[in-house]
Length: 356
Image 1 (tube, rainbow, N blue to C red):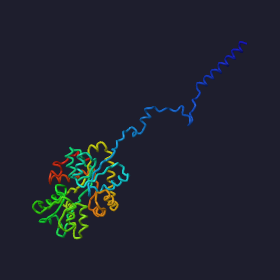
Image 2 (cartoon, rainbow, N blue to C red):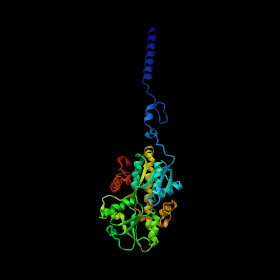
Image 3 (cartoon, rainbow, N blue to C red):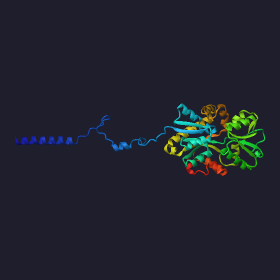
Image 4 (tube, rainbow, N blue to C red):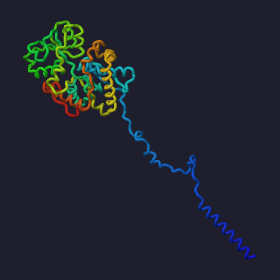
């Protein structure tokens, strides 16, 4: 009996030992695709750093409106498509345009802080840089040479042929006068003694006199050249002053540029870039689609008649130069103007901060 009891006790102990071993080595259940209870949780810190960087970057504030000024004539013609887009609500930027008939109107608005961006004569940009203590920067060249000498007759075929003549002109004390004087001097003529230059205050007045045959020789910019030619079949373009400039100078003849308020550009750099992109597209459209563009130019009040704008466009040399190309062109032009008359650029040449 005692022997039987010992045998049974041994069997119980053996069975218990196997059961314990089996429990210790039991494998963990393998999670299925839908069982996420055993998947590793990504730490909070890792989740935050894995988010795209854009989510943590501050978005540049956009201005409520970009106030843009331009002039009637070639200086403003390249902006016509952008003005049309703004009027139709299809422009990327929110623009408020101001079209002036004279440079001093634009200058007053810039100095008073009423404009963020403006298209102005290149020498006026330098003057404004001086008057605003450097709060004006040039961001583009938008107009090259637009000056022509017209003749009722056929005696003028070179600048030297102007010797002894009476030439009527506009733009005294501004870029046209200094361009003319530079070309005369480069061709061996003294504007004070070798010919007589009579300045009129209005382009339209001189255009009317040339068209009526009251004036034999006159220097005018486009689109006034086209307006004068349309009224007189005997009137002709005697000299293209851009061609004459190229004969005596290594620089580019620049007449118009685009400036920006430095404070505005520093606060809203992306708005400035957007404007330049849209302006470039506008210039390209105007040059490639003169008929459509001329209607927009008239609608914007830049040129009174679309027919005149259409004929004038090929002679207006509308462009948009930026970056180093712009800087070189403007710098060279201002050096020429400064050499002719320091007052024409505000008494001193701008420093490197003038170019954006």
